[in-house]
Length: 421
Image (cartoon, rainbow, N blue to C red; front, side, top):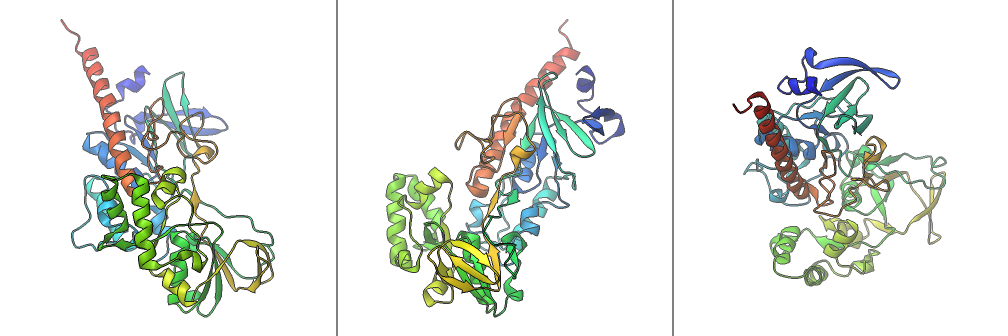
C-alpha cells in the first residue's frame, strides 16, 4: 500500500508502475491505476470519463472490442435513428451540433460520440476483455483482471450497460429450420430479403422498425407479438411524445399523464387492439416505471400493419423445415427468421462478490435513482432503463462522488508530506 501511495502521480502505462505476479493459473502484469477503472467504452463509459476529466480526474477505460460504442457501430441496423429528440440523448458537457436533425441518424450519433471522445481526450484501451473483477478486502482495492493484466484501483465503474449480450430464445425445432435465423444484432438492411417471407420475432422498437425496413425492400414481413404492448405516436401535438410526457409529469400525476397519452394516441393511431397489438392494463409511463418496458414509438409500422403489408401473429410454438407453427394452431411457411428479442446485462458473469447487482438479471438491486452507487468504490452507469438521459444523470453523480473522495485523499496526502510544525 505504501508503494502504491508513492505511485499515485505516476502514469499507469509506464513500465515502472507494473510488477509481475502469479494470479490463479496465469502470469499477469499487475498495474496500479491512480484513478477509476471504467469497464466499457460505450456512451455510458465515455460520459462518466468526461465528467471525471472535468473534475481533474483521469480514468482508465477498458473496452473488449476495437472501437467505442461497439453496440452502435457493429450491432445496429443501417436505418436506425434516435427514437427520442437529441436534447434528451446528448451526453454531459457537450450538446449535439445545432445542424443535426431532431432525431439524429446512427451515423450522426456515432460521429457525435467520436467528437465527444476527441473533445475530452478519452483513449480507451481496446481489445481488452475483463474476465473477472473483485474487491480485495485485505488491501481495500479492486482487482480487475484481463487475460494479460491485473489492474488494481480504488474505484471501479461498471459501464457495460443493459445491452451487453444478445438474448436468443430457445424455440423448439430451431435446428430443423432450413432458412437463416439471425438476431437483429446481425441485421443491417432488408436488401438481402427482397421478395422473401420473413418472420420477425419480437415487437419492441427494433422489431417494429426492422419490419418497416423489410417492407421498404419489398420483402414480406410478419411480426410475432407475444405480449401486450403500448404503441404511441412518436410526436403529439407538434412535440415529441417523450418531451411532452416529461413536461406534463412536472405538473400532473403519472396516471393522469398516461390517460392523456392513451387518449391522444387513440385519436391519432386508432385502436391498436384491432391490429393484434393489445395494450397492457398499466399505462405506458407507469408500466415503464414498474417493469422497465419501454413503449414503442411508431415511425410508420402501424400503417403497414393496417394495410396488410405486415401480418401479425401470436407466439411461436415450434419450427420445422421452413414451417412455423404458432400457438393458435396456424402453420405458415417462411424463408427467414429475425429475432428482435433484445439484449441483457452480463455483469454477473465477471463481477464477483457484490450486492449492487442482482444475480437474476444483472441490474442494480436498488431502484432508480439509487442504483448508481454500491459499496467499496463500486459504481454502475447505464442501467437506469431510462436511456441516455439516465446515463447523463449517473455520470454527473458518480464523478462528483469520486471527486469528493479524491480531494479528501489529496488533503490527507499533503498533510502527511507537510506535517504541521
